[in-house]
Image 1 (cartoon, one colour):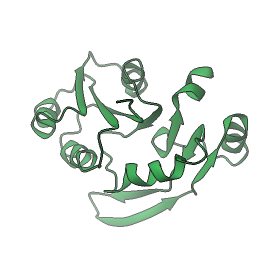
Image 2: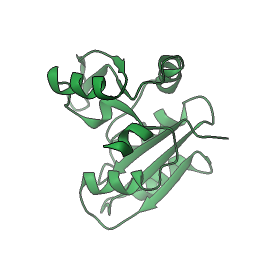
Image 3: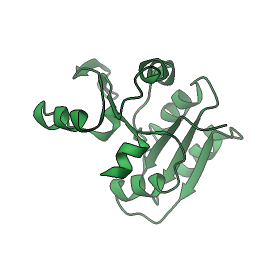
Length: 170
């Protein structure tokens, strides 16, 4: 089966959040995705929690590397990703139960090069409610890049899905 999505999760000392992150990804429906969890040399018990959460779920792949930085961990995952679309979820983030279902529906007809999600911020410590950041869009190639620059959408990588062929062409 061809993988539709590769979700790259860089992890560095996020033991307080990683279980919620991984469980939110485990709840996604389907087998057309992989989750690449990149333990970037964590010094806390993140790796043990990752192993416990992932268990024998074959959609998840755990990698451990020497500590670099978040970009290095993401690039490590990118080099191993096999999906048609690339997504990023940080180890202290979580996704909604229908995250991939909504994305599948959005890309089905137009096969856009970039999808920008509506994302919400949640303050764990203060338990403050979520705050919406931006609007969703689905655009092809150069138009997508121009929208990112013109509209100053280019804020965080985890707010986007990138078609692999588009990503690799730039």
